[in-house]
Image 1 (cartoon, chains in turn green, brown):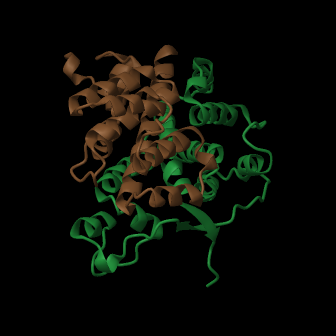
Image 2 (image 1 turned 90 degrees about the horizontal axis):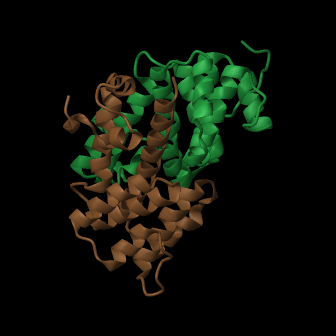
Image 3 (image 1 turned 180 degrees about the horizontal axis):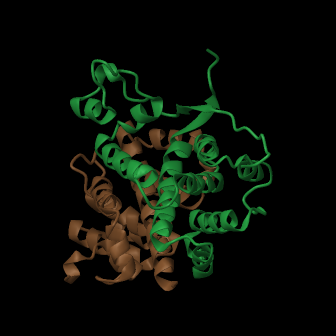
Length: 192
Length: 168
């Protein structure tokens, strides 16, 4: 637990292209969006991607497995991988969601404050530094990630199976950021 | 275990059947199978919205080259040949500058793939508007975005697993 009280604001997301309208959606789009008579509220993000329902359904299943599958790397550290990728790619919306999830799961406001205020260079505690360094390199320019960075993860007691989970969590945000940050932008949450 | 048990990710990551990391990958079948299913939906979807399998393979090859995975690009070159290549598609795959004679639709697609692969942080509303002006439909814009994002994901998985295979 940290003494930091740093808070990341919740944001909404607004697409640059007109999303699918639930009222006029095809059967395949409705199925992809999981619209049922009792569930007609679908986020703008899901409705935007539902223009191509086939890829949306496959990717969502993979995404959920990578972020939520039981066992392996601690869920908080998968969220940290997501946050680092989102910071590299400047996906403000993704960063805000996954910074908050990371704090909920880890209590590490101090790490999030460091990333938001000073960036990804740190310094962080040694284990966090190893995770941030590797995910940053993999997200920015994969060819610049090194086996020394992977060895540093091993030296901090992270197993190979856990590193496989970390690789996937950073990589799937190389994907998610390339959707959310290119197809729309973050907006303040509307006042209720 | 035969070679047929190796998928594209294993081969390009240098994983051998029966190796420790090969076995570890199989403890996450939802990652292994999910990645292959995603590959089909972006490279050879049932509904391609007019973006041909050949164009998709050519773009995937080009992006893999820009990411620095010539081996991944070579795999997509083979898929491109199977799908039916031509000089224009081969030029896209090679990473060449877009020819001045290229149509606006294709030029806009190539520009976007290059931008989002290399500097996604710099993309803005204007880049999506350029695609619309060049005649891309909304489903085409989403399908293109998913293809670009998939190849960037795949390359990062490959790089990560290759490095992990090198350490104890």
